[in-house]
Image: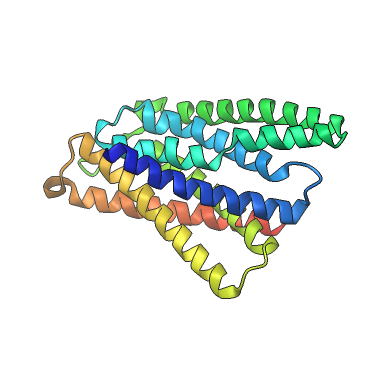
Length: 235
């Protein structure tokens, strides 16, 4: 039951994110081609490839609900095969056969390539010492910190594009940024703490390590988020 609740909550968040991202992309690039659906599917495919290695293949039993909420809930709600199918069919009915074939080709090949890139990237991170090195009397899960930083980088790019292309008030923009960044930093830091607990660390003996890992994760995510903001502003 806990897993079902986690998936339901994650799915709600993913669906809202998909709506915001796809709507912003359509307002930016127009609806002459399914840019919005293609964007969310490619981004979601890359993330599920990377997170499949980071969250599933590491076999962290303690965080089963956490993994289900992200992979099945958030990314399942964020990506959409049904919208891709419907939009492709609409293109065919409108006589845009070339656009329909292009959408099929780019979506299928692009998503498969994105999954492969994400999976290979994560595997490279975990090659050395299974993604963790000794530090402060415990282990520093550097691979998971890098994965979190990549996620923050993507959030920075997407958020900046949306904030510049979607007409919303300054107050809502500020609230969206604060909530989005705060939730991401909290959840990514929480997963690292759960990882350490699952690998034998305790609050009594490794509190300094846990606090240091949380701070390092937050700083690295903020740095890559800022980098994403800078890059997106040039688009």
